[in-house]
Amino acid sequence: MTGSTERRSEPILAVEELEVGFSVGDRTIRAVNGVSFSIAPSEALAIVGESGSGKSTTGLAVMGLIQRTKQVHISGQVRLKSKTGRVCDVLELPARALRQVRGNDIAMIFQEPMSSLNPVYSIGSQIAEAVALHRRMSRADSLARALELLEQLSVPNPDKCLVSYPHQLSGGMRQRVMIAMALSCEPRLLIADEPTTALDVTVQAQIIELLKQVQAQTGMAIIFITHNLGIVSEIAHRTLVMYAGEVVESVSAAELFERPGMPYTAALLQSLPRIAADRAPATKLAAIPGSVPSAGALPTGCRFHPRCAHFLAKTCDAARPMLEACAPGHWVRCHRWRDIGDFAA
Ligand code: ADP
Ligand code: MG
Picture 1 (cartoon, protein in one colour):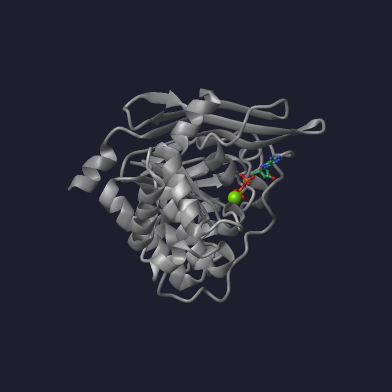
Picture 2 (cartoon, helix red, strand yellow):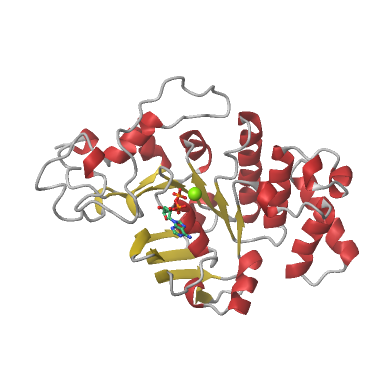
């Protein structure tokens, strides 16, 4: 199968020990702590976790959108294999090279398309501008390419859409336009940060289907940041679960639902809406007690221990657990994975 061979091929992106901290007054907010992962062509990786766990900060850092300043600290490596075959560290690229990478190699779509579209320009000129920025094309050719993209994304009346302004379109249509802009330069990696959260279930399903189609056609890798475990089961080959700035579990999509290793992941599965395309949201959800610790005041030991049903004093609150392999292709950051759940001996 080409898909699985490709998935085993060399990664297009390898993130190593990524750290992002923000100095606020005399405190440092440690938003991302030692995050490592890689992704291969044709692979879809989901990043899940409650709000505030560092998912967006990770995506923005990979995209080169977080700049080092006195207040913003970044370390680690974000190694990207570009279209030319060269490997670069996104965190060390000068601004000009970064602009080349963004758009040519990596593109990102955000939750709220309205904030990323300019209200005073037509859709056509905005997509055409994105196309023209990365390809030396005439205005007419860029517009033709914009039309082609809208057709690919199954936008009804694409001609009419091109001459429309953002406020004239529905949320689902605006999101498609954003996706068209992101795909306009054929990125090898797409980072989608909760791109369907604001949309209704049917439109969500259509957008997921579109992304899967593009992936099948082009071999694009996708990092999909989401709250929605229904979407994870639709699109992801592998899932990273983040909690308080750390990766606490890395698992294949199938095993995520079958046997989560980390109590946090198990709690998430019970608490988050599992909106599959064809299913209504569950009516009653078991909330995880407590809340994500502030990135400025993290607990000792396992960061989840104050909320964990399996908390063991002097173990869970002592040393920080390492990410350990609990099964082939399955890693978990929990002192007690051997004692609890499906991995108990
Ligand atoms: P998620 O996307 O998982 O909801 P974020 O990556 O947005 O989480 O945020 C992780 C943590 O970093 C949060 O505590 C958030 O408040 C903090 N944070 C994010 N961006 C900044 C910033 N520019 N300045 C200060 N704190 C920030
Ligand atoms: Mg976010």
